[in-house]
Image (cartoon, rainbow, N blue to C red; front, top):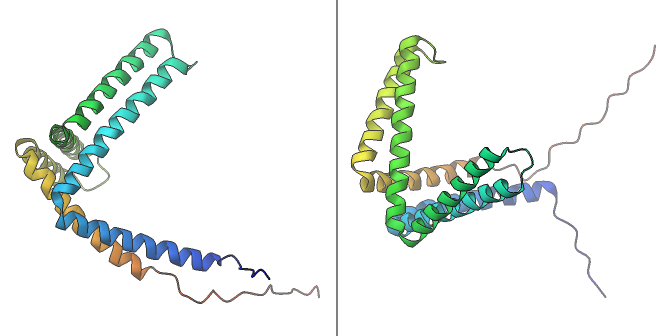
Length: 193
């Protein structure tokens, strides 16, 4: 005699997903705090793998796209090959990969800060002018610190990221749906009088 099992309710699936997400965030945050070196190595390897996959994707586009002209096809193909090579180097030397990642973040923050200050000075920001200028200055300072102290900057990002993941996991538990299904509403009948 075979026993039949019913599929879990959508509410049970949603609760399970929320619980799994919260636990995963907390565990990853704790891992980042306890083993920052292993976390940094993982980040470096993922960065290298991303570069390889991204470069391969560009090469595929260069060879298969019908929408690109010859010059653009060559440009995308060469860029793809360079990105694959950079990814291979990053995988072969994870510490160099982290240093490159730190510089990318640093220059991104510096350029973002300059743009925010320029927008604030011209009055073209969505925030008050003074806030755009202050945030731009902070962004430039953070980019400068990352640029001149890349190892400290990346290590700090991992530690801050670990604490943020733990906080997100705990907050996710507070968003857990109730075990009771919402009361079903019955349609209201209208009378034609």
